[in-house]
Picture 1 (cartoon, chains in turn yellow, cyan):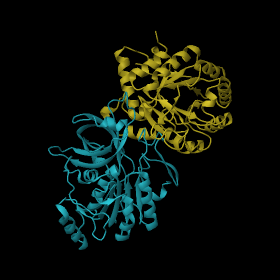
Picture 2 (cartoon, one colour):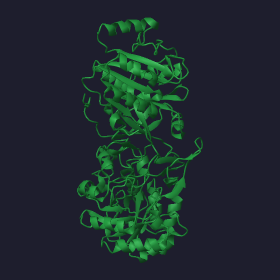
Picture 3 (cartoon, rainbow over the protein chains, first blue to last red):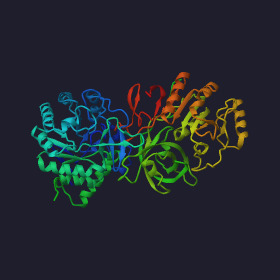
Picture 4 (cartoon, rainbow over the protein chains, first blue to last red):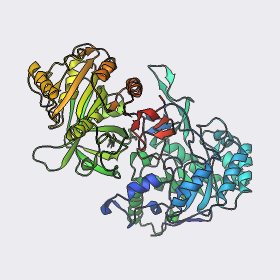
Length: 314
Length: 322
């Protein structure tokens, strides 16, 4: 069975990656996976190289402290988060995370965060010096920061401008991560494609809110937070389906994937690769477990090449 | 005194499908869950926690972090079991109450940075607020095995809540009875309030144990309990922190550990600082991954934001920005 997929020139040994922010740079999970019993392992080596690619936590030019107060709450079949892209900045990322990632035999998609177009570009320019970086995923869709983030992702002109600026800063695969919090996601998708994006990731979290009835106050300091988990899967699936029909570049589908069958559904809707996000919290062995189930599913269904599934919706 | 590791540094975590041995309401909204855990239980260090997964992940997608209260064997089974005390505060803990013997629960653990009891500690104080006693219980055992004199200052809502917390020693899953073993007068320190851990009868118990203490004989079987209750039904009527100053004046503690409501821990940390005593606190945060990846559970420290799941839950009291 052929599991390899090609994502905008990036060869992935299987279609699985992780959603930015749920997995840091992977070391915490790799440590756990290396403790697995052999019988739990779907392949002979349980390390990050199980993944088709790793997608890192968002990296900004300078250190960001993230948001104050409560950062997560559980919802029906999902969760809200308001982490606020806390990260130590690109220099520390290059010094601490990239050397370790270089030993992991896995393509590295670095998620890039910024408050301004210049900041996105500056992060890319710094990372251009690093051989370990396989591709960039530009986060123009985070609902949890005040300036930048989602403000670029809800306006086709701004999305196009950021994409263009990033495009001129790198020749490596450029992936733009889209928000579902827009009137028509295909308009934004087309704008990014026209501005030079090689691929699109969708969806980022859905904007939501939680209220503490007793204190009569919002749970999160910024009121808004990002909804993820199985609750948003139908929204994500529909977004992938629509964008697949609107653009010619490959898609990374994500949003509530919690089983091999979920992953298959995203491929059928048009995703070339898929990302596991919140499900890593439910099951820290989600990647090995779902990959094993996925291979089993394909075998049962007589799938010879996983590419047969991509956009295979009838 | 410098803090040092009482044991080897924490081993890497595992994922284990454990079996529910017992799950029982102790009193009010306080429950105790006992899990058969042959793989994780042997690795637990005092102060560490496990991340409990539910089998209804279509509704509850997040695990719940619960401190390990005790590790022990049950009769007729060589495999180690661990106990968790939990208070029903939300949907997750409410769901846990539905578990019954034989059910499977997926654990991730042991997780976190536990207590760092100094090896040369002679006399220590544990300050627990309600269910915050849970991670202090194993520490009390460790301290006793090091021959340290252990004082436990415990705040609880009522006598029955207190009694359940303290008497449930974990040498059996539900070994408590409903009567307080010894009434200790927490607010009268000229007669040190004492309960022997062997739970003897009535007032004589504390007199005899106190006599042992006075003769500076072995303290290894003794924890001196100082209770405070919200309703005054046992010990001091009021907050346990009301008793701190007089305890600190009476005994020469060389280490303080605390867990419970954060305002309580903050007072304990401040008193420890004033008296120059090493103090560790165990902080509770909402948690997603439990592994240090998601940054949901951060704690503000003098060294920036740290993660309760992996840098904590136990922190040096001096580094926490309250």
